[in-house]
Length: 80
Ligand SMILES: [Zn+2]
Image 1: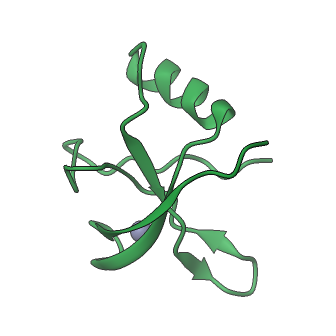
Image 2: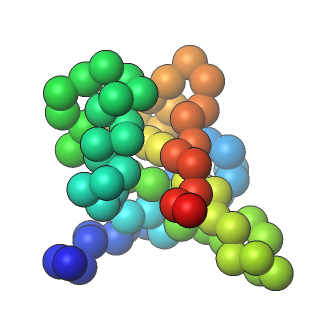
Image 3: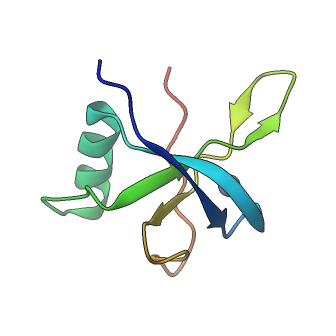
């Protein structure tokens, strides 16, 4: 798998600058279905680790230019 780009962006739910990365192909498919859209390439996902014990990440979504693109934050579910 190609290395996904990462970038520091403010996260609306972490309330701080956090490392975000572009979505994997599987995550893009998941989000397309959820939003009913055909393209979701502008989205970035927050990689901030909320729980060091389990490694659970924030996974809140934003775009490259909008911190809160949805009325309510959307977090992608963690992979199985
Ligand atoms: Zn976050």
